[in-house]
Amino acid sequence: MKSTGMFLVSATSLLLGVFACISLSTPDQVVAQEKSKPAKKNAKAGKAKPAVNTKNLDVKADQLQSSFTRDAEELATQYADAGFPEKARAILESALAVNPQAASVQKKLEQIKENVMNANVIELDVNAAHGWDTFDVLVAENQPVRIRAEGSYKFDSGPNSLTAAGFVQKDPGQDMLPNFPCGALLGMVVIEPGKSGKPFLIGEHLDFVPKESGTLLLRVNAPPGNRNAGKLKVAISGHVQSH
Image (cartoon, rainbow, N blue to C red):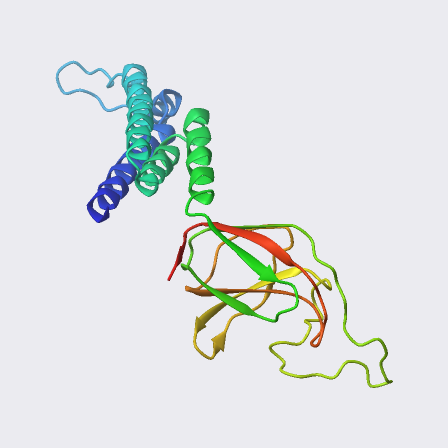
């Protein structure tokens, strides 16, 4: 994969340089540049050098661009069919860097990304009465993850009556989080034991890219001592693995 990536970077950089030079030097510009230069007398004939016409070369450059895009799309399809979506994605992204207007390549890239997001499905049940629960699901830095939640549960805040003091705060990690909807599904990535990340809202559906690798924790945002009844069925997919 490393050698493939290095080749794609080198090839793409080379082609981008070629097409950039072509776009910056159109035939009209070449003619204009030639006209702006003082004519140099030929020692023998005394004639100015004729303007250069690059029309034929530009046609070949367009053909090169089209050929690279077509071949890249075919190769990416073969990689995807062989079970290597990441290599397929890298090739398609390189093709788009050379030819951003290639609609078929863009469509293929979106399809591969969607297939990756729906792969490696891990299904689990989140108890609505619990605080943060770990399900031994690992996520990776800068790798997209999809979370979907279905089902319903009975919400019961707990005590039938309260004093003016309100709910008694217990473990801050288990208390209801004030900046999120009451009863909503939340997530958090624990980078290492004792080092928690920042909670985030999941709700019924979320696609996100973790900023750091770690273990994914889930919970329903409810006050401590709640008497919630029921579970949410959660499916996690994309760049995830269980341990």
